[in-house]
Image (cartoon, rainbow, N blue to C red; front, side):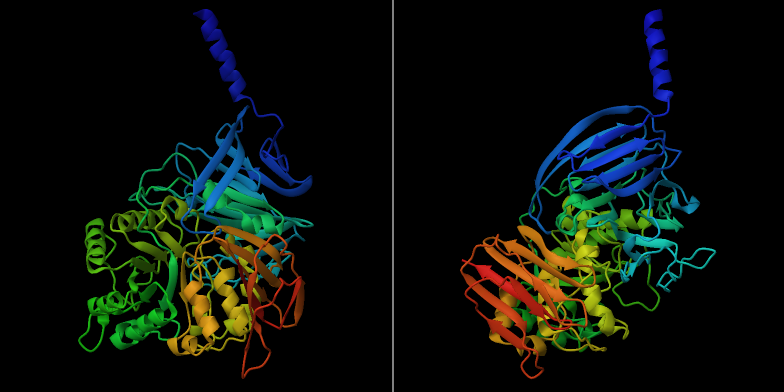
Amino acid sequence: MNRVIFWMLIAGLLLALPARAWKGESPNGKLTMEVNGGHLKLRYADKQVMDIVIDESIKMTLKVAARRISEDYMMLTGKRLHCTNEGNEYRVGGMVIRLYNDGLALRSETASPLDGTSGQQDIAYIIPEGTKRWMQQWSDGYEGFYPLSTTYRVEPVKSFSGTFKSDEGWCNRWGYPALIEASSGVYALITEANIEQGQSASCLYNDGEKYRVVADKRDEQGKPWPGHTPWRVVIVGTLAEVVQSTLVTDVCEPSKITDTGWIEPGVVSWVYWAYNHGSNDYNIICKYVDMAVAMGLPYVLIDAEWDEMKDGKTVVDAVNYAKEKGVKPMIWYNSSVDWIDGAPGPKFRLNKPEDREREFAWCEEIGVAGVKIDFFGGDSQLNMDYCIDLLESAARHHLLVNFHGATVPRGWQRTWPNLMSTEGVYGAEWYNNVGTFTNVAAAHNATLPFTRNVVGPMDYTPCAFSDSQHPHITSHAHELALTILFESGLQHLADRPESFLAQPQQVQHFFDMLPSVWDETRLISGYPADHAVIARRSGDTWYVAGINGTDDEKTVALDLSFIKGKNITRFADSGTNDSPWLITQPNTLPTSVRMQPRGGFVLIIDN
């Protein structure tokens, strides 16, 4: 007995010792880390990527042997339906660290939750001055730009949630994802994944070069703390490896929905861009249903204010009209947790569990296929709990979900595959609000494939050939390319019916055949704000889309040698206003493409 007690005491003393420097690596050996005290230094192909500071409150005791992670799973939406990953997991005291071939994921396991109201943190990222970065200043709806900067001394932009700035006057609160060029040709995308009940989402607060991960506020009325933080994720590699990564869903919990046969992604006819208040007008809704029929679109969205429909009609009349035409209707709700006074309705129908169940049961009964829920209030625990409750309840009633005015995706699309899309982006609806977007849209569009859209589906609402309240100066082919370049399980088309139906027959047929999920995704060429060319495969058909983010003509080399197909259709800009389209059927795939200023192109290749 005395010998047992002796060795127990020795083991206790060893566990109490501070950790020595030790190393870990990804399965392919390309990504390595060295942990020494409170610092984790990350390298890719022997190039420095990042120094991560681990808070002293997390005891980094002796290293535990690595565990190999190997996963193979299917998605219903996203950049790749069949996903695989390999990783090595290390447990060091209160920290779990995973090195995947395409990045790092780590989380702390703490008995008590981190509380953002007191500024608690678990880790911080060091981003040295001079490092190129594309970062969005935080706002509760994540609707901002990702301008290139090489300094933390960035002037604050007033957001919907007010301005966050340091004592010296520069912005000090940042949203996910954040892209940096860590070394020449090596990039790191910082984000977060696998928010669970009882957790807040986090964002970045910076003190100079140190960007602290700080959880949003908690509430005693929220769900119990699960015993660990969400995964802090850094996707690492070339730009192509970052764009193609599925690391955000890789670290998330598997699907909680066993029967997913009713979940069908698709393209949507959408009223708001052209008619702010169109969903309270039955006749306007019918126009968008008829457009969906003419263009072969499976869905129509009845947006805000359907509870105030005019001329004696109701939303049930609109739903029935869509169903009679073979189009599946979706309807909008106000989340009623943030913008309430002066905001459109319907309101307060989803907040209480019993009301939510009744409302979603009614939706299912009358034949509604999905719900768009808008105006959330940021990253707090109560908002995260509420979103998960909404997804769970919607799944019980076979309803697809689209979150708007909400935080960016953190992997729920795997755990709750009825989550088709999330806004969290400065998208085309802003042509309907202010004139700011006109001159910056092309560069912004060419940045999103490397930032926001990497982490999950993005309801940008692309493709407008005509103008809303404020003009757009991107070309027709640029707009068409966005429907492929931007991934979303529900792809809402922004333009009015008259505009779509005035396009050449080949363009209308393009929308009839447009996939909204992809078997494979590859970045062909690009650089943030300059240009982006992405190839996506659906079955045996490849779609290649490219846009020019600059005000100058641009020629881009293309390596499409991996694509095998005989039938090629090319959509490009003619360069004239009277006849803007150049639609051809070339015999061979191009090795380069010339795009006009703010222009674009689409190639469709099949057998």
